[in-house]
Image 1 (cartoon, rainbow, N blue to C red):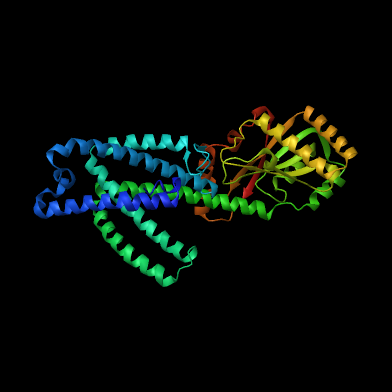
Image 2: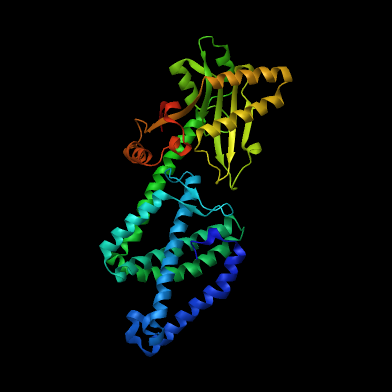
Length: 418
């Protein structure tokens, strides 16, 4: 149920939980409690012991089916959480496949699915019995409830604008009950309960490392981004050569010029005759029409033929075909120029762009090496120089996600000290 919250609307969940889930769970637990009052010695297997003999196998089949459905729901929930963590910059890059055009939260992540497969095999081989696995499962469930209660209390204050006293009473009442359950489960820590706790700590460490360096990297770029006046100064510099062709320089900035660009100029002293700074932004709808996908603006002076383009794409839009992408971008660039220029100037600019296209399109990506500052702490050096670098090199690279042909890819190396 908790894993599927992002896949259905609020009303459907309210109706199903109120009319089906809650009555069924209460009936099952009340029945087991009544059975244990009469047969307390059968507490070890109260669920199946309380069943009539004729209902054992039908119930067993239903229970197995429910376990399969529940495991699939938990896997889908994990995919959704990791997808959201990716959008917040809290997880290394992985491939996210959206399986539904109606519900954004229905996703499939191949790399995580394989990790689950390997982890499940290792867990089954290590625990060997369902009894030991259930001990780990108990701590995971009650731990999830504790975290949920804590987060809901924060939402009550920050989002729902409830008073601090209402949130405190909610936290004390439900948190107290859950802490009692958690304290009873923690006694099984050495018998298998350590697995979910250690796993969660490990994943939290990975997410924390990635988010910390990702944030510091973005802040470094933001502090060192180049103002628009730089383009005017560049246009006056006769030492900068214009190379025939179209250059697409990818950047995370919607406004401003990334620091990788002046680094490129300093190293090569040349620039393509037509240059477009491309920023790709995924928005929470399934698809964006071609007429609304590309937003252009000039970088003055106009005669320097440099543009900034924000590419808005939905979660079902595919950008992994470079030929299709560049064709769509150039066509929309021409349409933008047609709106901004008179007919004679427009035709001259279009002819110039066509000639540049004949010389080829080059994709430029910043190959940024993030290192810790020499005077930083030992912990910061370990996190940045080793842990983050290992994650970045062993997870999916950005050029593979966008399907850029290797022969037309130019990686610009630069080092950020954070």
